[in-house]
Length: 138
Ligand code: IDP
Ligand code: MG
Image 1 (cartoon, rainbow, N blue to C red):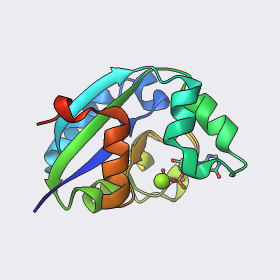
Image 2 (cartoon, helix red, strand yellow):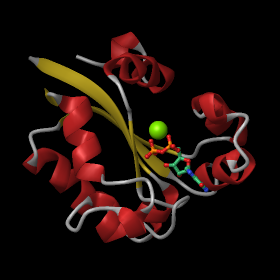
Image 3 (cartoon, helix red, strand yellow):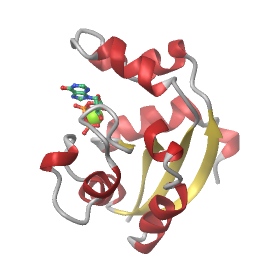
Image 4 (spheres, rainbow, N blue to C red):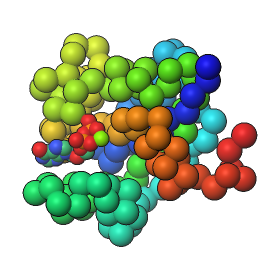
Protein backbone atom coordinates (compact mmCIF):
# COMPACT_ATOMS: atom_id res chain seq x y z
CA UNK A 1 0.00 0.00 0.00
CA UNK A 2 1.28 3.44 -0.87
CA UNK A 3 2.55 5.40 2.11
CA UNK A 4 4.02 8.87 2.48
CA UNK A 5 7.04 10.17 4.37
CA UNK A 6 8.73 13.53 4.80
CA UNK A 7 12.35 13.97 3.71
CA UNK A 8 14.59 17.02 3.99
CA UNK A 9 17.80 17.50 2.05
CA UNK A 10 19.73 19.41 4.70
CA UNK A 11 21.92 22.52 4.22
CA UNK A 12 25.22 20.57 4.01
CA UNK A 13 23.92 18.39 1.18
CA UNK A 14 22.43 21.33 -0.72
CA UNK A 15 25.75 23.22 -0.34
CA UNK A 16 27.73 20.31 -1.80
CA UNK A 17 25.35 20.12 -4.78
CA UNK A 18 23.93 16.71 -3.91
CA UNK A 19 20.23 17.56 -4.51
CA UNK A 20 20.27 15.72 -7.83
CA UNK A 21 22.04 12.61 -6.53
CA UNK A 22 19.81 12.31 -3.46
CA UNK A 23 16.58 12.85 -5.42
CA UNK A 24 17.76 10.26 -7.96
CA UNK A 25 18.24 7.76 -5.12
CA UNK A 26 14.70 8.35 -3.87
CA UNK A 27 13.23 7.75 -7.32
CA UNK A 28 15.42 4.69 -7.97
CA UNK A 29 14.16 3.18 -4.70
CA UNK A 30 10.52 3.79 -5.63
CA UNK A 31 10.10 6.83 -3.39
CA UNK A 32 8.43 9.34 -5.67
CA UNK A 33 8.20 13.06 -4.83
CA UNK A 34 4.59 14.27 -4.69
CA UNK A 35 5.56 17.54 -3.01
CA UNK A 36 8.93 19.30 -3.24
CA UNK A 37 10.08 22.77 -2.26
CA UNK A 38 13.40 24.53 -1.79
CA UNK A 39 13.31 26.95 1.13
CA UNK A 40 15.33 28.64 3.84
CA UNK A 41 14.03 27.70 7.30
CA UNK A 42 13.88 30.41 9.94
CA UNK A 43 15.31 29.46 13.32
CA UNK A 44 11.76 29.38 14.72
CA UNK A 45 10.59 27.09 11.91
CA UNK A 46 13.48 24.67 12.58
CA UNK A 47 12.70 24.78 16.32
CA UNK A 48 9.06 23.91 15.66
CA UNK A 49 10.00 21.06 13.38
CA UNK A 50 12.46 19.54 15.88
CA UNK A 51 10.33 20.35 18.97
CA UNK A 52 10.59 16.71 20.19
CA UNK A 53 14.34 17.28 20.63
CA UNK A 54 13.83 20.52 22.64
CA UNK A 55 15.52 19.12 25.78
CA UNK A 56 18.51 17.61 23.95
CA UNK A 57 21.92 19.25 24.42
CA UNK A 58 22.32 19.59 20.65
CA UNK A 59 18.95 21.33 20.07
CA UNK A 60 20.31 24.87 19.68
CA UNK A 61 23.17 23.79 17.38
CA UNK A 62 20.83 21.61 15.33
CA UNK A 63 18.25 24.33 14.75
CA UNK A 64 20.97 26.92 13.99
CA UNK A 65 22.46 24.51 11.47
CA UNK A 66 19.08 23.69 9.88
CA UNK A 67 18.42 27.40 9.36
CA UNK A 68 21.96 28.15 8.09
CA UNK A 69 21.22 27.69 4.39
CA UNK A 70 18.59 26.46 1.95
CA UNK A 71 17.04 23.00 2.29
CA UNK A 72 14.76 20.94 0.08
CA UNK A 73 11.65 19.50 1.74
CA UNK A 74 9.96 16.59 0.01
CA UNK A 75 6.87 14.48 0.51
CA UNK A 76 7.82 11.06 -0.86
CA UNK A 77 5.27 8.41 -1.79
CA UNK A 78 5.79 4.69 -2.29
CA UNK A 79 5.19 1.31 -0.73
CA UNK A 80 6.59 1.12 2.82
CA UNK A 81 7.91 4.67 2.30
CA UNK A 82 8.83 5.44 5.93
CA UNK A 83 11.02 2.37 6.44
CA UNK A 84 12.36 2.39 2.90
CA UNK A 85 13.57 5.96 3.34
CA UNK A 86 15.15 5.21 6.74
CA UNK A 87 17.03 2.28 5.14
CA UNK A 88 18.18 4.47 2.26
CA UNK A 89 19.37 7.19 4.69
CA UNK A 90 21.49 5.05 7.01
CA UNK A 91 22.33 5.65 10.67
CA UNK A 92 22.21 9.14 12.21
CA UNK A 93 26.01 9.26 12.49
CA UNK A 94 27.46 9.03 8.95
CA UNK A 95 30.53 7.25 10.35
CA UNK A 96 28.25 4.43 11.53
CA UNK A 97 25.99 4.38 8.47
CA UNK A 98 26.14 1.35 6.17
CA UNK A 99 28.16 1.73 2.97
CA UNK A 100 26.06 2.98 0.08
CA UNK A 101 23.55 4.86 2.22
CA UNK A 102 22.90 8.57 1.66
CA UNK A 103 24.44 9.55 4.99
CA UNK A 104 27.54 7.38 4.46
CA UNK A 105 28.08 8.95 1.05
CA UNK A 106 27.07 12.56 1.74
CA UNK A 107 26.93 13.24 5.49
CA UNK A 108 29.65 15.46 6.98
CA UNK A 109 29.02 14.85 10.72
CA UNK A 110 26.43 13.50 13.17
CA UNK A 111 24.74 16.91 12.96
CA UNK A 112 25.26 17.76 9.29
CA UNK A 113 24.13 14.34 8.09
CA UNK A 114 22.68 15.24 4.67
CA UNK A 115 19.04 14.18 5.09
CA UNK A 116 16.05 13.94 7.41
CA UNK A 117 13.46 11.18 7.21
CA UNK A 118 10.34 10.61 9.30
CA UNK A 119 10.70 7.78 11.81
CA UNK A 120 7.07 6.50 11.85
CA UNK A 121 3.92 6.71 9.76
CA UNK A 122 2.30 8.81 12.49
CA UNK A 123 5.18 11.30 12.61
CA UNK A 124 5.33 11.37 8.81
CA UNK A 125 1.76 12.70 8.71
CA UNK A 126 2.57 15.39 11.27
CA UNK A 127 5.81 16.39 9.50
CA UNK A 128 4.24 16.46 6.04
CA UNK A 129 1.52 18.76 7.35
CA UNK A 130 4.17 21.00 8.96
CA UNK A 131 5.51 21.91 5.51
CA UNK A 132 2.72 21.21 3.00
CA UNK A 133 -0.87 22.40 3.01
CA UNK A 134 -3.48 19.80 2.06
CA UNK A 135 -4.20 21.76 -1.11
CA UNK A 136 -0.54 21.52 -2.23
CA UNK A 137 -0.42 17.71 -2.42
CA UNK A 138 -2.22 15.33 -4.75
P1 IDP B 1 17.56 10.90 12.86
O1 IDP B 1 17.68 12.13 11.99
O2 IDP B 1 18.44 9.79 12.40
O3 IDP B 1 16.12 10.46 13.05
P2 IDP B 1 17.41 12.01 15.56
O4 IDP B 1 17.87 11.30 16.79
O5 IDP B 1 15.94 12.15 15.34
O6 IDP B 1 18.12 11.29 14.31
O7 IDP B 1 18.09 13.45 15.59
C1 IDP B 1 17.63 14.49 14.75
C2 IDP B 1 18.83 15.19 14.17
O8 IDP B 1 19.56 15.82 15.22
C3 IDP B 1 19.87 14.28 13.49
O9 IDP B 1 19.54 13.94 12.17
C4 IDP B 1 21.12 15.13 13.56
O10 IDP B 1 21.10 16.16 12.55
C5 IDP B 1 20.95 15.80 14.93
N1 IDP B 1 21.62 15.02 15.98
C6 IDP B 1 21.24 13.83 16.51
N2 IDP B 1 22.09 13.42 17.47
C7 IDP B 1 23.04 14.39 17.56
C8 IDP B 1 24.21 14.56 18.40
O11 IDP B 1 24.55 13.72 19.25
N3 IDP B 1 24.94 15.70 18.19
C9 IDP B 1 24.59 16.65 17.26
N4 IDP B 1 23.52 16.53 16.48
C10 IDP B 1 22.75 15.41 16.62
MG1 MG C 1 14.54 11.50 13.95
